[in-house]
Length: 113
Length: 110
Image (cartoon, rainbow over the protein chains, first blue to last red):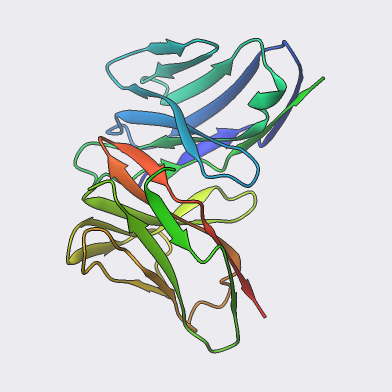
């Protein structure tokens, strides 16, 4: 089955700096890669996603890049703010895979003032 | 708020006891999922159901059981066979490949 690895497990940045979280996946048939944000005590929520026919996608201060050849994808957050502090999860799934998402182990991002 | 309701928020299990976690959705989604969240281990899939009266095991199904008698409901039973049940349990439904999560149930062992 699919295996998703996520790094780093914790990340601390200064407010205004950029943050990058990286994930690799094992199944070359995976074609959908979402990112979820979970604030402390709250449910995970989708923040951005990308499909395998696209190399990059941006939404204001967040962007996701995908390298299908290397089987890795990354989340980029620019101009970080304290409200960006949360746990971020990457995930992967494939068409015909029963709509199952396989998640990474999460990255605890802390934005310091 | 979200359309996925989980109850209770906190649950305590005694040795040898089965407990059931409730999950209800009003989003009219066919697919529903149960994930277990442990610190440092991300979200691991327990069971999922793509349609009423059908469900499949996920990656860590041992010690758990589910039913899907109604589209809106997907309860999870943590049986006495699950020796390490302490975790945060998240229910979700899927609409257009996007997961919508409930607010979770924290299960602890007395």
